[in-house]
Length: 255
Image 1 (tube, rainbow, N blue to C red):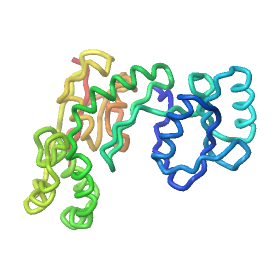
Image 2: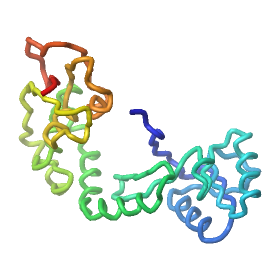
Image 3: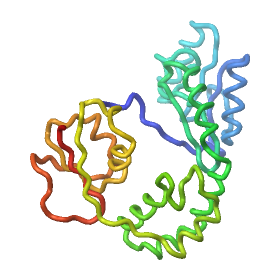
């Protein structure tokens, strides 16, 4: 399954952004750009991004055409077919930012999802992240090998783990570093019941998210393989691995 859009986080502080239009829609976009530290400029200025919030259809389409002819990426308010990029609903737990997009299909749905997720993410998430950043040198010292570090953090961040992001306080990072648990090498057999990735159980999805490598028959659909970490090694095989390997190894087979 291909991505409708590639999610990106762009640092806009001190950078120019074109904003065209007036009214409440333009005002809302202005507030968002200013919150990100962007310098709002007019159409003739040099900028990589533009937001067009012009109500008149002909005027808006003409402005969009002019901007795109210059190579400027355009967000056109209420005109998803004209958008090069869309602006998501945002949950701010700085420095953690959660962005929810629908590719312009339904801003209302994105807002509803934001409200649901807002209640799940604690206020401690930002300070926890800042504490992890402050102790990154100590974490690297405790786990010099990248794979070991990723696995240890993955286990700590798991539900109920020492650094569960939905439950842990910032002070937990130091306590975890005094006696970190190194996860054991694991071999997980995942029996697929259908080609629908939504049929994966929570435990199966978590195993894929932590997997260092995934062995699978060629018949396993990409939509399921996409649930694994992007950097996990995919190995097409008709039989499970017979030798032990470090980290988490997942073998998929049809039930």
